[in-house]
Image (cartoon, rainbow, N blue to C red; front, side):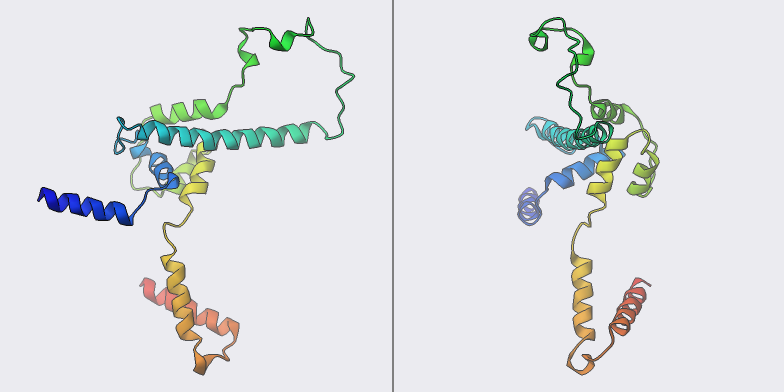
Length: 192
């Protein structure tokens, strides 16, 4: 039985490769946010969290750049502005003030998400993130990007296959709206 399990795992690993998006999608499901199914010893969990932090940092940086560009006009010249520093080397001086270091909102958001306990049933995951948008703006934006991606292209390939059968040599003169209606009816019928 052990050999059979090893062989099944080997086949599964050869056929299905987890990508970064798959790992992030697991993290975005609140029941699995601690990533217990990944090995801590091999550093998988910390690698996944680092990938998530990179994506969130890109989002926040992009948002900050957009905000700066809308607040400060592109033709603004600050070369004549008086310096508020006490010496001409003040930018190199050591400082213990917290506001000198960049504070990223996504770090607090990520920490709060990992600590919060959610009562999640079988809700639609995008609905969950839509409800949490005000509390977790960057994570909900990441969830929309990652979780809205179809898991496979099988449905679109199936649709093209059906369209190829509808538009064959004998029915090649069908109007586009007629073909669309036939495909719609076929899709509707197959859902029942």
